[in-house]
Amino acid sequence: MGITTAFDARSTALEVVEGVDLTGRTAVVTGAASGIGVETARALAAAGAAVTVAARSSEAAERAVADIRASTGNEQVHAALLDLTDLDSVRAFVDAWTGPLHVLVNNAGVMDTPETYTAYGWELQFATNHLGHMALTLGLHDALAAAGNARVVVVSSSGHGSSPVVFDDLFFDRRAYDPGLAYGQSKTANVLFAVELTRRWAADGITANALMPGGIWTGLQKHWDPTVIEELSVAAADIMKTPEQGAATSVLLATSPQLEGVGGRYFEDCHEAEVVDEIQHGIHGVRAYALDPDAARQLWDVSLALLEKAGWEITG
Image (cartoon, rainbow, N blue to C red; front, side, top):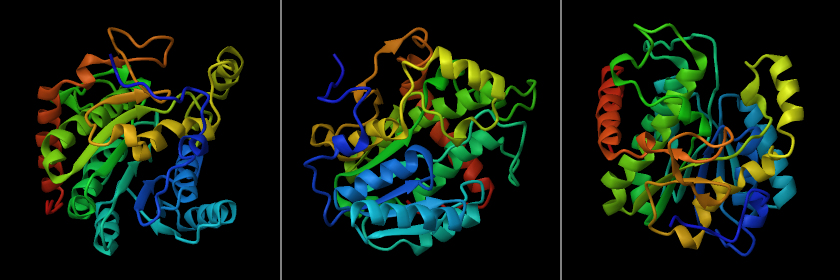
């Protein structure tokens, strides 16, 4: 039986942190200028944490900071530039960080993008959703270890059900590019990363869990056909969430006393998800390949080699 909590699919991020005191704790949320990212940052700030809003646009990050400060009264909310596709940007963020880090929410992501490759030759979705976040997390290892009982929260998706990590063709060199499969692979990588990080770093007091936030209309769907969005808006209206509800599971994993020391798992609707042979109703369950410890070890090693080849110095 998996972990269950008092919350559910309709709970909001602010409801999850009610009664939780994060005073004196620090948090970083990537992609926190909009969507579920800004609501995750808002809830952590509402609970008293010092929150860094990390985003690709300084202007968007500053707007989010002003909004969060105004709504929570917490002045310890700050903006930081972070482009996960640029390792120089990731390094600058890491080098600027001082002190312990209690919560890292790897929330930023792209979905179903046209075939695009970064300067390192990496497919964009795998680069943004997984490799950039891995570099960031590795760079912040010592800050996380210094916090004691630090948590890494990795925003995955039920989209992981469309593809395992295809190790012999990560970047579609031999296959025709398929944006859905590329997205699915990157989201499976997110779960596997949480599995292996916990195995490697639990002794340092660092654990990681992955999650499916639910179906939420945000900027993430900007590459979708507008007709498809319109049809789904009607057909799936009863299961869609608001951004405040979509952030709830992230905030639960970041703050709940019930999850102290728990890692390497996948959650949805504020509960641990069931392992399934096929994703149910398009959004429920986790595939066994996303939790496979051997695949998790292989992904870590392959990803490390890619980062090092691109010039990333591994210090954690």
